[in-house]
Length: 229
Image 1: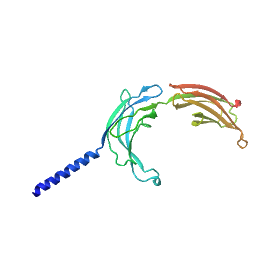
Image 2 (image 1 turned 90 degrees about the vertical axis):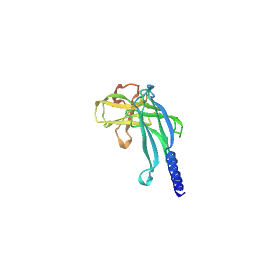
Image 3 (image 1 turned 135 degrees about the vertical axis):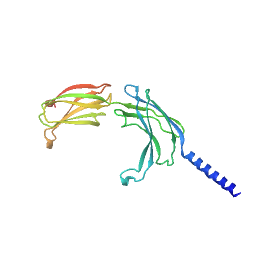
């Protein structure tokens, strides 16, 4: 009788362990999507997509962080048609600090992420589409004349002048070639300035060039005469 009871209890323990193990595997969840260049409307192949999961790792702001870390769950690449699909086991034990997300920016040089749609829901077929862009090279071939109050400073601005992307300094008359890698179809301004009298506000400034990047590498020639401003 004792042997039968022992065997029965052992069976319950084994069944209980197996049941808990199955529960902890998580819920099968699917992610599908595509990667597209938003400017030439072409699908992007061999683009790395990384599934990550955040979790609480301690520390907090007093230790120079927010106490949230992330780990890589898996990594795949888009196929020849820019399409990707994979399945994983969705397991969240701490909803306040844990979540899944797709990461692809900064690991797919030279592409940059413009937009990413969709969220990851447990047990669902989740569609995540990624829009990207690839920088084009704009070469500015500048001729500077009558630089009588150096340093002459040039600054390239975008977003209606609200974002500065590059700044250069010139100490004399010169011809200089500047290479910029910027987003396609963006309007930019090249602003020049110099100061003749810092104490009396003798700042001179002008927009020397306005241009819009195309879909292809471009060279722009411009001459700037400091006597004109």
